Length: 124
Image (cartoon, rainbow, N blue to C red):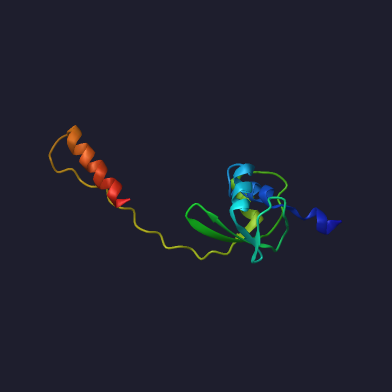
């Protein structure tokens, strides 16, 4: 009974640990591909518990975490961080790109502003 009580649906745990804003987004992430202890899982109802290692993509990054505790509620972020251990090495931060300077003196014209916007889109 104690082992069963310590397990929780994977979509619900991801939502409670604040990896996804809604439970339906967590379910979509599970359906699109998620690994639990190296095995692929596609059902949001898959049960997970403490000690399980999850590998999933979140945005453009791949997260690797170990579940430390099952959640009881979706609480504040500091409480949610106690539910898992992040196994990812800290990624080096890329320096923020500098905004292009306008050297025309004064406020740019509409044409100049559009050129700056095109240049900014190319950098991103």
